[in-house]
Image (cartoon, rainbow, N blue to C red; front, side, top):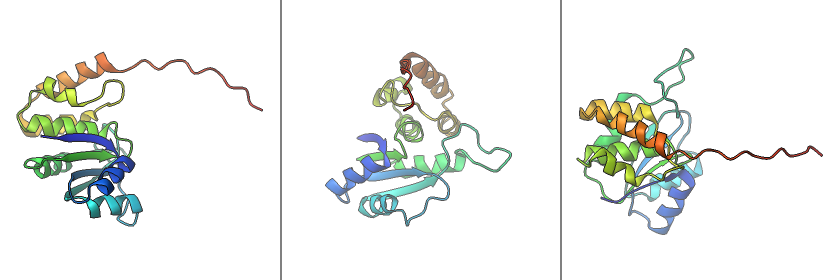
Length: 168
Protein backbone atom coordinates (compact mmCIF):
# COMPACT_ATOMS: atom_id res chain seq x y z
CA UNK A 1 0.00 0.00 0.00
CA UNK A 2 1.29 3.42 -0.91
CA UNK A 3 0.22 6.24 1.43
CA UNK A 4 1.57 9.79 1.54
CA UNK A 5 0.99 12.51 4.12
CA UNK A 6 0.97 16.17 3.08
CA UNK A 7 -0.69 19.55 3.22
CA UNK A 8 -3.39 20.76 0.85
CA UNK A 9 -1.02 22.69 -1.44
CA UNK A 10 1.32 19.73 -1.89
CA UNK A 11 -1.71 17.50 -2.58
CA UNK A 12 -2.75 19.95 -5.30
CA UNK A 13 0.72 19.72 -6.89
CA UNK A 14 0.56 15.91 -6.80
CA UNK A 15 -2.88 15.64 -8.42
CA UNK A 16 -1.97 18.18 -11.09
CA UNK A 17 1.15 16.12 -11.93
CA UNK A 18 -0.89 12.89 -12.17
CA UNK A 19 -4.61 13.65 -12.60
CA UNK A 20 -7.05 10.92 -11.55
CA UNK A 21 -4.26 8.75 -10.10
CA UNK A 22 -4.47 9.48 -6.37
CA UNK A 23 -7.21 8.61 -3.90
CA UNK A 24 -7.48 11.50 -1.45
CA UNK A 25 -8.47 11.76 2.19
CA UNK A 26 -9.00 15.54 2.28
CA UNK A 27 -9.33 16.89 5.81
CA UNK A 28 -10.31 20.51 6.13
CA UNK A 29 -11.90 22.86 8.61
CA UNK A 30 -15.65 23.21 9.03
CA UNK A 31 -16.77 26.13 6.91
CA UNK A 32 -14.27 25.50 4.12
CA UNK A 33 -16.18 25.13 0.90
CA UNK A 34 -15.87 23.66 -2.54
CA UNK A 35 -15.50 27.25 -3.78
CA UNK A 36 -11.96 27.35 -2.42
CA UNK A 37 -9.76 26.76 -5.52
CA UNK A 38 -7.33 24.35 -3.81
CA UNK A 39 -10.20 22.31 -2.36
CA UNK A 40 -12.07 22.21 -5.68
CA UNK A 41 -9.03 21.35 -7.80
CA UNK A 42 -7.75 18.59 -5.53
CA UNK A 43 -11.16 16.92 -5.43
CA UNK A 44 -11.76 17.31 -9.18
CA UNK A 45 -8.33 15.89 -10.10
CA UNK A 46 -8.40 12.98 -7.65
CA UNK A 47 -9.24 9.45 -8.73
CA UNK A 48 -11.61 9.41 -5.75
CA UNK A 49 -11.88 11.40 -2.55
CA UNK A 50 -13.51 11.63 0.83
CA UNK A 51 -13.81 15.03 2.48
CA UNK A 52 -14.04 15.27 6.25
CA UNK A 53 -14.30 18.54 8.12
CA UNK A 54 -13.04 18.98 11.65
CA UNK A 55 -10.63 21.23 13.47
CA UNK A 56 -7.23 19.99 14.60
CA UNK A 57 -8.31 19.69 18.22
CA UNK A 58 -7.93 16.77 20.53
CA UNK A 59 -11.39 17.17 22.04
CA UNK A 60 -14.67 16.42 20.30
CA UNK A 61 -16.58 19.58 21.16
CA UNK A 62 -16.01 22.52 23.46
CA UNK A 63 -18.57 24.73 25.19
CA UNK A 64 -18.82 26.90 22.06
CA UNK A 65 -19.58 23.97 19.75
CA UNK A 66 -16.13 23.97 18.16
CA UNK A 67 -15.46 20.42 17.04
CA UNK A 68 -12.46 18.15 16.69
CA UNK A 69 -12.88 14.78 14.99
CA UNK A 70 -15.70 12.46 15.97
CA UNK A 71 -15.87 8.71 15.60
CA UNK A 72 -18.17 8.83 12.56
CA UNK A 73 -15.66 10.99 10.67
CA UNK A 74 -12.79 8.63 11.49
CA UNK A 75 -14.97 5.69 10.45
CA UNK A 76 -15.64 7.44 7.10
CA UNK A 77 -11.88 7.83 6.57
CA UNK A 78 -11.18 4.17 7.37
CA UNK A 79 -14.08 2.93 5.22
CA UNK A 80 -13.00 5.06 2.26
CA UNK A 81 -9.37 3.94 2.47
CA UNK A 82 -9.95 0.22 3.09
CA UNK A 83 -9.46 -0.85 -0.53
CA UNK A 84 -7.51 2.10 -1.92
CA UNK A 85 -3.93 2.36 -3.10
CA UNK A 86 -2.00 5.49 -4.12
CA UNK A 87 -3.53 7.23 -1.15
CA UNK A 88 -2.86 10.79 -0.04
CA UNK A 89 -3.90 12.00 3.41
CA UNK A 90 -3.98 15.79 3.29
CA UNK A 91 -4.88 18.38 5.89
CA UNK A 92 -4.01 22.07 5.94
CA UNK A 93 -0.40 21.67 7.06
CA UNK A 94 0.14 17.93 6.61
CA UNK A 95 1.25 17.49 10.20
CA UNK A 96 -1.45 16.29 12.60
CA UNK A 97 -4.87 15.36 11.20
CA UNK A 98 -3.39 13.76 8.10
CA UNK A 99 -0.68 11.84 9.97
CA UNK A 100 -3.19 10.57 12.54
CA UNK A 101 -5.40 9.44 9.67
CA UNK A 102 -2.56 7.75 7.76
CA UNK A 103 -1.41 5.92 10.89
CA UNK A 104 -4.97 4.78 11.57
CA UNK A 105 -5.49 3.62 7.98
CA UNK A 106 -2.32 1.55 8.08
CA UNK A 107 -3.35 -0.04 11.38
CA UNK A 108 -6.79 -0.78 9.91
CA UNK A 109 -5.07 -2.79 7.20
CA UNK A 110 -3.45 -5.07 9.75
CA UNK A 111 -0.07 -3.35 9.85
CA UNK A 112 1.55 -3.42 13.28
CA UNK A 113 1.29 0.05 14.91
CA UNK A 114 5.09 0.31 15.33
CA UNK A 115 5.52 -0.52 11.65
CA UNK A 116 2.76 1.92 10.67
CA UNK A 117 4.53 4.75 12.48
CA UNK A 118 7.51 4.36 10.14
CA UNK A 119 5.43 6.21 7.54
CA UNK A 120 5.54 9.33 9.74
CA UNK A 121 8.48 11.72 9.76
CA UNK A 122 9.98 12.18 13.23
CA UNK A 123 10.06 15.82 14.29
CA UNK A 124 7.52 16.78 11.63
CA UNK A 125 4.41 14.67 12.08
CA UNK A 126 2.38 14.87 15.25
CA UNK A 127 -0.64 12.56 14.89
CA UNK A 128 -3.91 13.95 16.16
CA UNK A 129 -4.55 11.70 19.14
CA UNK A 130 -8.33 12.01 18.98
CA UNK A 131 -8.22 10.58 15.46
CA UNK A 132 -6.01 7.78 16.81
CA UNK A 133 -8.30 7.23 19.82
CA UNK A 134 -11.41 6.88 17.65
CA UNK A 135 -9.60 4.55 15.23
CA UNK A 136 -8.28 2.41 18.08
CA UNK A 137 -11.83 2.02 19.39
CA UNK A 138 -13.27 1.23 15.94
CA UNK A 139 -10.52 -1.31 15.29
CA UNK A 140 -10.43 -2.70 18.86
CA UNK A 141 -6.71 -1.93 19.02
CA UNK A 142 -6.11 0.07 22.22
CA UNK A 143 -2.34 -0.38 21.83
CA UNK A 144 -2.41 2.14 18.96
CA UNK A 145 -2.70 4.99 21.48
CA UNK A 146 0.16 3.92 23.76
CA UNK A 147 2.47 3.16 20.84
CA UNK A 148 1.71 6.50 19.15
CA UNK A 149 2.28 8.43 22.40
CA UNK A 150 5.61 6.67 22.96
CA UNK A 151 6.65 7.40 19.37
CA UNK A 152 5.82 11.10 19.79
CA UNK A 153 7.66 11.35 23.09
CA UNK A 154 10.76 9.81 21.50
CA UNK A 155 10.65 11.68 18.20
CA UNK A 156 9.58 15.25 18.78
CA UNK A 157 12.38 17.69 18.14
CA UNK A 158 13.19 20.21 20.80
CA UNK A 159 12.72 23.68 19.37
CA UNK A 160 15.88 25.73 19.24
CA UNK A 161 15.83 29.09 20.90
CA UNK A 162 15.06 31.84 18.46
CA UNK A 163 17.23 34.91 19.01
CA UNK A 164 15.45 38.15 19.84
CA UNK A 165 15.07 40.52 16.93
CA UNK A 166 15.26 44.24 17.51
CA UNK A 167 12.30 46.30 16.42
CA UNK A 168 13.21 49.05 13.96
